[in-house]
Amino acid sequence: MMVQQECEGYRSGWSAAHEVLLLSPAPTFTSPEAGHWFAGQVLFEGTGAAGKGVDVSYWFDARQLIAEDRPVADGAWTGSPEAPLAPGSHWAKARQSGTDWGDSSRFEVAQVDGSPDVTL
Image: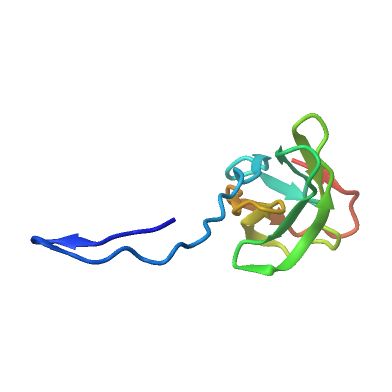
C-alpha cells in the first residue's frame, strides 16, 4: 500500500510501498453465554475456520493460554481449560493463526468442593 497525506491544500509525496497483512475473521464464542455459571469444568464452544486450531487465553493476558490448538470441524470448535479456572468472573479470548482475537462474554465459575464437574 502507498499513501499520500493532504490537508488544507498541502499534499505530501507518496510513501514507500508497505505490505499489508489482511487477517481472517476472528473465531467466535457461542458458549459460554453472558452470565453463565459453571460449577466445575468450563466448556468453550464457538466457530472458526477449518484447518486451523483455536487457542483460548485469559482475556487480560493473551500470553496465558488456557486451551491450545482446539480443532475446528465443520466450522465449529469446542474445548475446556487444561487446568481448572479459579472461582469468580472470567472473560476469555480465542484466535487462530492469521486472525485477530475474538472475545467471550463474561461467565462465572463457582466454588465447588468435592462435587462432580457439572454445568449449571
